[in-house]
Length: 357
Image 1 (cartoon, rainbow, N blue to C red):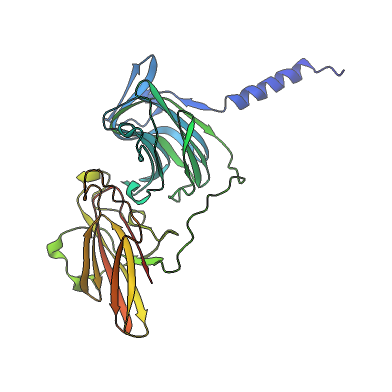
Image 2 (image 1 turned 90 degrees about the vertical axis):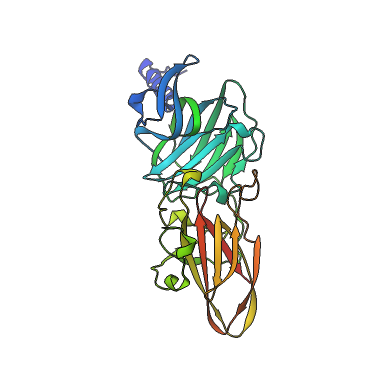
């Protein structure tokens, strides 16, 4: 039997030790974090903890690409949000959070991209999960990220698969998010190489009738009395492309005048414009949805007004989007026709989707 030298054994032990300690714990002390006035670091339940009243806090000098991010959140039965932010660049990032007061409800855990400091959970109803949280002690939140995909675990149980992370960020800062105060502990990261073996979950095939491109204006404060269709024709427009579903996440392309303050935001609007060419006079079905409020113009005349914001139709109304929710029969003239949609938003997701059959 061949003898193994003591130096080789030591080398192997070192390698095993190194592979097992690749997980990095970020201690909950002020020196490790880009501290805000909303953050307090203190000893609680025999742990170093962070009490975050609201907003986001990031780890100092730490960039994240792929791997796992974990944190423990102390049980909380009053209305509150607690989660992880990753791949943050300026005011655009990915975010997963627990709504601890919504335990055992359909939207207890949510994923949202943050575009230009605006949350967009209202646009992504498919990325929420029913989770039963502990009402005492600590709840463990873990996200496994691989390129444009992620899996979310609560207390070691997988609760959500995100097949397509919506921002274009491939790396960035990491940190924590809270609303209405939450306590965090035991923050860990484990960087990993990307795996190409994971299969992408298939998205709904694109409907050929979907309007895939729009021209939109910059964001402006909304004032109905000052709205004049003649001014629409003088606006500067940029061309933007929707997601495969037809969803246009407006905050991805333009920055709101008032952002990041949820329902305390002012109402901003943009004008989304498209041309329709018709070889004859005819009627076509226009199906669409939006958030929060919309005015639809056909060839300069208002043909629809509606509201679809969070809680506009009841306390539990989410305002999620479905392209078949609203339908109009458009009387098209021969030649060029124009649709202008004034889309108005306060918070939770600024969006538009439409198709023409």
